[in-house]
Length: 262
Image (tube, rainbow, N blue to C red; front, side, top):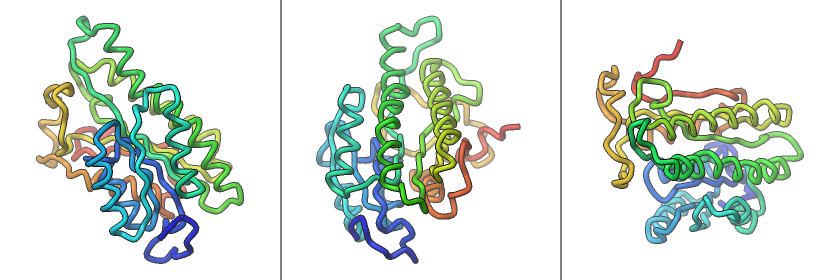
């Protein structure tokens, strides 16, 4: 069903449009399918793999939702307007943005090259900041009449909350992203817009070689397995649905018990 539909029973996100970065595979793909199952139309974003992005778009359409594909490097200066414009052009609105795309690099703290530090922050913090500025403005305009209000979901990670080696730049970027998320929750809650971070633990995903070995921080988690991408997507789906309307400014750990908090 295209944006503007009215089926809000079993499909509570019918008539809503979502933009999910890094949604051609892994957690982003699972999130696109979860939101499409609830009726949302989705902009599928990837950097260069058109085949994977189109396959995800076809899977979204199989749920009866609409899909648009946008391939773009999110670190480029025009990325925010390009991505938000893709939603505007395809669906005439934007209601949900999920900042999922990120990069991981690994070096001991004393050996992190400044170029790599800047690369990680450009991808994991500056790019979401630029996108969220453009996306939140579009969401507020699309929901000016009140009601749903809109949703922002960012992706963090358990490595920022437990003992983690060799990822100081990634941890710094994700903690900064949490600050952005909570600021959005504070500034726009009166408009009905919610903003939350989901922090996955170890997830069974395809990883590029540059990500390095998985952190050992979760090797003693109570639930002794990796998460499925669909389990992370399930929490994002909940936050974007009507049941998530009173949840904002939170970081929700979906990590098998790596981090209990306190």
